[in-house]
Length: 252
Image (cartoon, helix red, strand yellow):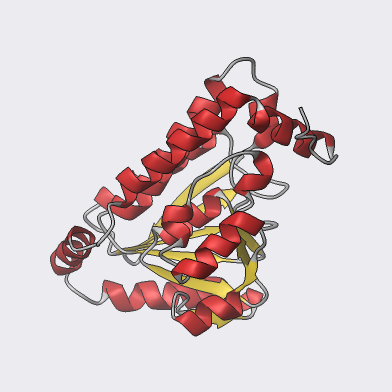
């Protein structure tokens, strides 16, 4: 797994690369949080591009790691790691442009929903499959991307939607061919970098201050129900079924 950073012409580029589907381990989520925070604090940086290499932008947490770890350490670590990474994107001192391709699932929704601007490749899908794994979370961030009733349907059914819908709602700034995605994100970042670094940082801080929902507190509230579900045992069965590639048995 690698999370790399490159800074050029005022743009910090943070790249996730964790085959096969860019699902992050506990350590990966905390690393991403640290990298984004450090880049945003660099006074030379005017904007940050968050993207991924390989298949998919982000497929959420590494469920295999969670099921292969005794006790609740991996579950607690994943919850705290996701919280830290989502918070880092939201509170990054400069605007974050998410460049999304193939799919954005689970934890990926938390990252993208907390970004400032989104560009995406044609055919990209967005979804929250959490209920399939006996979990909840990131509806807070999905609600920043889609209307309320569609958000609820997506949570209940775990079915993804195409980027074209997000573009129609105005959540995605641009939809471009995959090979043009990085350039499109950097084009937006470059425009932001022509502005005063101080003014843009205060703009980011002020916009966060007028948000109608406290995303950090709201997400933490969601996570409490995931812990509750784990105590019932239903979450372990759902995750075991996922790892074993079978249908979950909820009859007991």
